[in-house]
Image (cartoon, rainbow, N blue to C red):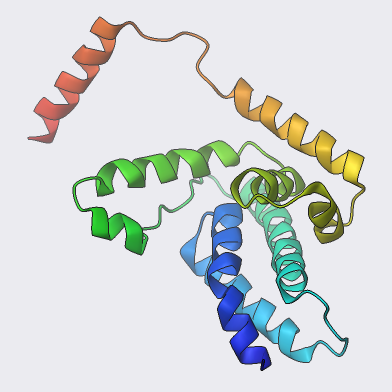
Amino acid sequence: MERLEIFNQHRPLLFAIAYRMLGSHADAEDMVQETWIRWQSAQTVVQSPKAFLSSIITRLCIDRLRLARVQREKYVGIWLPEPLMTETMAQRGDHVELAESLSFAFLTLLECLSPTERAVFLLREVFDYNYSEIAKTVGKSIPNCRQVVRRARQHLALRRPSISPSLKQKEKIVKEFLESWN
């Protein structure tokens, strides 16, 4: 199989990893393109193209996130990820708005994780990579990756609201929202 065919076979996975890590369609596409360039220039024999490409894109995204944190420290304002409309969402029609808001909420939640935590958490929880694959991808030990996932889950749990509104309060909020929307 030719390099282009192999790359195109894994392109949806690469985009999904990059998008979930970076929260931006444009940045994810940039990382996929950079991964293509590195894939083309690789001089070594690759045993597992999926693992090799996943490693490249994950490391590129970690670097981009680290750079983005430095840049946001200088930025005055709120940074939020951009929700992405997928083909599956568009086909469902009436569930599109809910899916968009859930995607946005998930990306916003991931913002509380460090770049490495985000990479390890996404590879494990979203893409179902095993710990040995994750360890090779991010250059850490297997026990360290397990610890990073545990720590990421704790960070995400801390973002949950500590006080849950009552059913009456929820109904009031929904009613007010619908009235203001119309």
